[in-house]
Image (tube, one colour):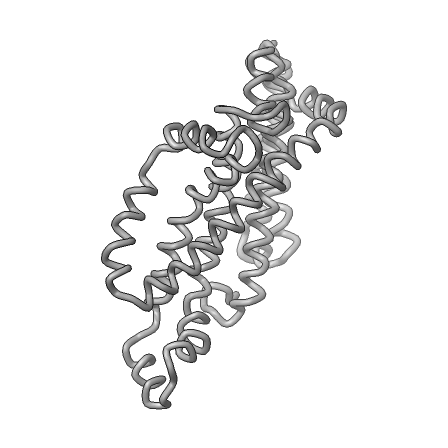
Length: 281
């Protein structure tokens, strides 16, 4: 019980420090913006460790962070193989194919009205299909390799990317488009010089949302058939063996990858759309 009390004291101390850093005089500094989430995360990890040990929670229910870190360090080679199979092959391959296809389809939908009226309602229907229902079918179609996982990812990222891109291409006003017509600009010139720049925040919103969907799709698809490698395969088999340390290690790999991928997309967005009001300040 003393460890639980210590955890609560550490939480109170971290909360007080973050309140102090969040004051208007300090919150604008770059160091304060970085320190607040780091302090919060470190406080949560320390509380997790102390509470689990203080209450003697069985490791098959919730292992402490130290056990997860030790398991992670002892299985780096195996986790790297899982990362390659799930992320670099299944998730990344499906992400690139799905987002590229959605972007090209959005250009066609924007160009031809009948495609907008016919394809977008179908897209909403397909996007509502549950992954636990479609993943087994795609595994049967494309086999147990990474190709079936990439197919699931394509299905998951295609329609969010399509809808965001179509919405972005409609962002310009009628006055702006009329002005381009007075300059005798063609549809392609208007697209490149006016509509695509205006759509960039929407396009990047679709790309950022798709980073997490790609990871979810690739991992869940491995639950329904996979070679003896992959994060989804590792999670499902480790749960059956009650090896929760390895389960959390695989989850940690996925979480770190998702965070870095989202951060990279946000960084590229900030670099390319520095002129947009959302990037100011």
